[in-house]
Length: 449
Ligand code: PA5
Image (cartoon, rainbow, N blue to C red; front, side, top):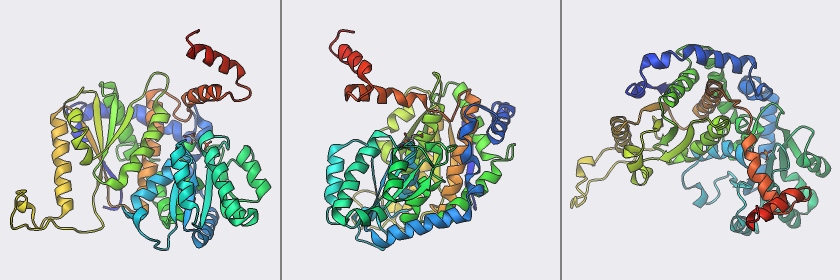
């Protein structure tokens, strides 16, 4: 298998092949709307051609910046949140040794993430860890004003400058932000940081194949050229309408299921390294589709782990869910179940079998059980955890998201809902300019309003 593959036959107990096919004209129109840029949010379609249009010189510049950080840092802290965080985290986790964090240096700096929460202990413990380490910073914020990364950057910039001196620290900080606007751009210019641009027409959650994702991935030691080559293959495949377009098929199928009352999609993986891939996917679909009172709720489970927690609900709870299984074809290592003379656990029938064989049967058995229990499922097969296939998968999901959002009747490229919490938080923190909101909030909390 040389590319990712999608199989939707296990949804036919809920929506038939004909019902899915009937949505093809709608899906093809949505695909055209994405590709021709004729729909709502069309000023945010820069991601569509990132794989094929990113100049080789930019990839080389990213690799060169990564080499500088790799050559001088034991730790590189990548500061960002949402779309400025999840893509890189997903790819690095998928490609890394599961225990890399506990292993001593292997020539690759350890990439740590910050600014994706406002945990005080998290920041304290991170600064504590970095106190005697050589570290650098990649700070990513399109707007340059997002509270969480801005706080983390204030702290870590200060720590780095105190440790290395201002001049040397400025060589260990790379900023990825808007070309002209925003506080981070201004600071980067003043301090002389190396910078990369997040194009105006690439939204955060669609930015993993831009410097936002590529620089941290390259710093971690992974092949961004292969990632982009895989994505470029998928860009080509998903530009052609028809039944061989996997993104179209996925969008059609999930919309058919949604219209049949399946309101929640669970992305299930059977490989712990894909946990953050699901987190990235949840942001992509949640922020793109959850608006105007509509949208499939994107959830995720790590199996078989969560069969021992969420398994009961999935098998037997309210029948409003469907499942999309991320199935990994090949593992990198072989471990066999050993023979045990006492056989107290009764598992000698597995002796000599690969652990992955057990996992695969758990996966197949679960899929069948879920279908029998009224949970239709789709399967997306990934040949192996390699840059090329992850590039394919990323682009596949992005393209399908654009198609699916238009089929749903929303603008998949805005996120008006994320402002509500910020307004309340700033009112509560008494940010200058929020005096009216602060007064209203105080009155509300004291029960006056
Ligand atoms: O997808 C999005 O647009 C958001 O998740 C943003 O990426 C997130 O809010 C961070 O924004 P910024 O990069 O401006 O700091």
